[in-house]
Image 1 (cartoon, rainbow, N blue to C red):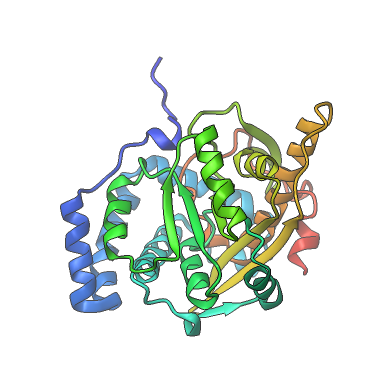
Image 2 (image 1 turned 30 degrees about the horizontal axis):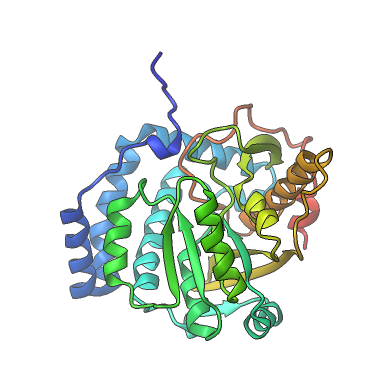
Length: 325
């Protein structure tokens, strides 16, 4: 039977290395403004000819609109969602080229960052597809002791990542391609954390290996599958866990780093699944909180929820409370 909604990792890549090289050339010659002029018709093209991505955007915006005040709902549209993605793409290039510096970034939790930098205990930083987590390279520029290893499924964007490796001059940030955490991979990551490094891993995309390693949690009023991988890895490595969200607000990036857990303990087999589900749910609520700060900046253009949109009388747990913070 044909799968009309394939897993995100099986979607084909669009574009070519030549095309991306051309875009990078335009970026270098004309700067961000010229790149935006080129990018805008590309975004219009994808909006018109990528119905699945457009439908996924609409689904997300319908989900989140119930938890926003009326004045914030008016600016929500799939087209603006696509345009915002293009804006963030420009900043991704700037980040990997080392052109987003500390003056362009507001560190909202300096005490936590300072402690991470001085203690050098290492750990896992769970990020998401909200905002622009590539700006985390600015952390390495700002904090000399902070060495980052970014876990990413590069086969999905292999061409883009190959190009980014060429233009990136930051030696404190390393990209590691993974499809699954093997014992060898876990040993490498353990060594890096013991040396005081931090492993950066996304916590909001279902794993490449399928739906078996997910927790079904409440997110924006409905049940959605979220991956367990980041938290299983944290439990395996017995290391501190942090959350990081990076949002573009008033033309500056605001980086929020939260201490999530000193360590996650899954040693009790009877409680292991419940403990894991609780950790994923806790992350989902924090992702929800930051999505409400910047509704157009969650870029997950894939079908996410199985159920219908929530009603205004059935908000997600903690959602309204979090929004008022």
